[in-house]
Length: 332
Image 1: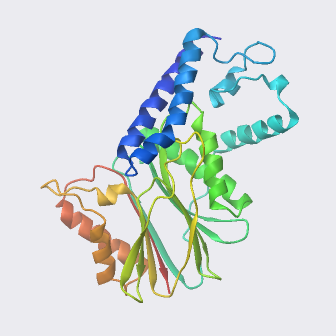
Image 2: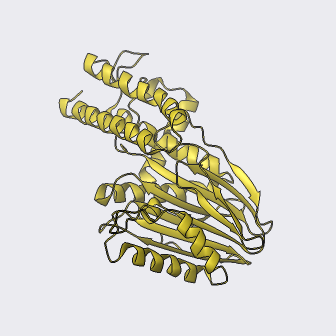
Image 3: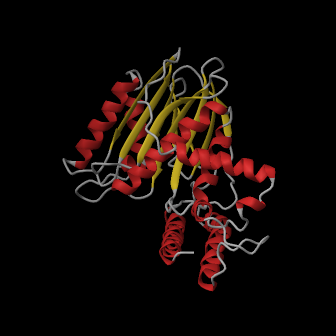
């Protein structure tokens, strides 16, 4: 294979390895996360070893070289297209089609019209292009999907990946009823693709307005806030797995709960809670609870404005260091 192509493979693998290690450092789950990503690090290291030996991309069936386009999409590929089984070829075709679809532009997002719910969203990039993503989608069964994600890094590279992530969600969600199936497919798309060398934290929720049930999966993202207006208590919807792009074996769990009248859901990215005051004090998530408790009677849009006002006052005019995203969902 061409030397330039193999150099691209090496660069992609080295960047992916660095980002996996960085993902372990920033994740709160500690040792458990470190153990979870070890299999993925081993796959990367084994691929780097094969690259140095000149055996990366050698077909185990015919001993020829795997097509470059296939190796670029999955650097662990070791079978030529002509030697694939019918099932393997069909799965590859699906993934190739998805890989092409995620490059296309999307329709503008819209706040969903859900009877009994008041919804608002806001996102502000720290630079011209941001890596935060939030969206509203519809599952195959008609239930509503809410996603908030944060691509590691900032700027143009994070924005490009954010755009592809947005397209992937719009492509996959209408074909399934399962939040976990969506995240599993996205993880599979990113995990061995040298064009995606970073990781993504995602909070993905499914709400059925008819039954007021919430099903969610939290892949390494900030815990969402669920404030109970009836009891004035709150809970944090914590991580149920680690970030997308770090897991060789997909292991994110789903949780479900019943929403009640007066409940308020707040999804956000760490650009909000990690915003700094001039004294280098972080904003932190407990302030979010205080703001919602003091303003629970206002609309979803007004709640976001209250949070932003508090955030700007806290930062005292200093620009945010990271992208900031907020989504509020009130059960009326």
